Length: 356
Image (cartoon, rainbow, N blue to C red; front, side, top):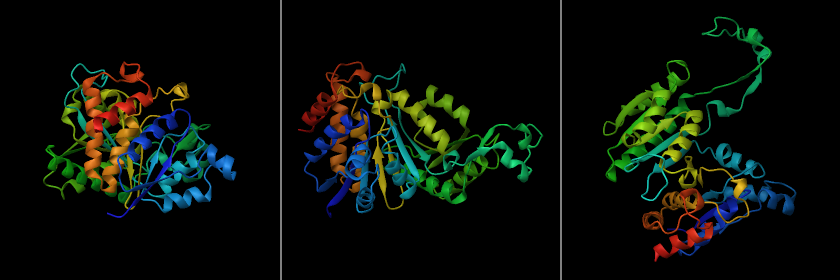
């Protein structure tokens, strides 16, 4: 295997406090990885006068993947480049309960699902405007039975679902379900949309995913209206395997899935394109924890395990995930969000001890 290059962008507030000890732990695994730390955010401003200087963009382009902390704004240009510039269209957010997680469920055992969120389209294309500008289009509300422009003054947002965008994320979801089935999972894809109210946009997403399912006869397929799926995600999360969702629903419901297993502090994330991927914890920058060495690094470490798997270091990824699982099973070292008082570095040290 050729040497891999990974860019590290620490982010803001408490995020660097999770990223730094996590990367230090990864470096001690002795893998053939070069860790690159380009100036981004405030470091970029201080060094180059730009939050995302050309050198940082070039470092990303020359790398195999990026490990990203979280941003409160100063690193957002880098994040936007990682997503739309590198076309990382599939956001994978696993939600697997580990014994020792502080889940709100009475019986969370067996929750092991993966939400695949379409990452580039839907309302996140970022097209908004004033309702008055729609007058020339003569668009009429199908529910209010009146011209949309008559509702002015006000604002609108554009929801975009494309055939190509849906097909590629659907294929990612079915391939993921097939891989999980080879590891003993049942192999099922669940699609959830609001196709009853949005038959042309959400309806298209559902139609394209359903059509993709016909090419995977070994993978079971089901579809729900998204609000029905939301309540099922709380009442019977163990039934789900891989869930594919349009961007907005995926963003919201993946956080719900994290809450089901124990909170965003234990929720990893990876964003995949055809030729690049970046990995980040699902939580934000946690400004209330900045400077306290108290943020839970589990989400960062599990995101790093996804990174290692993506790079081809599957044994190291399993070793890291297993060490985290053993720390939680023992229950002696837990961060504040999981009912303990361990620091960020205490937790990373405990994981490293479990690595042997």
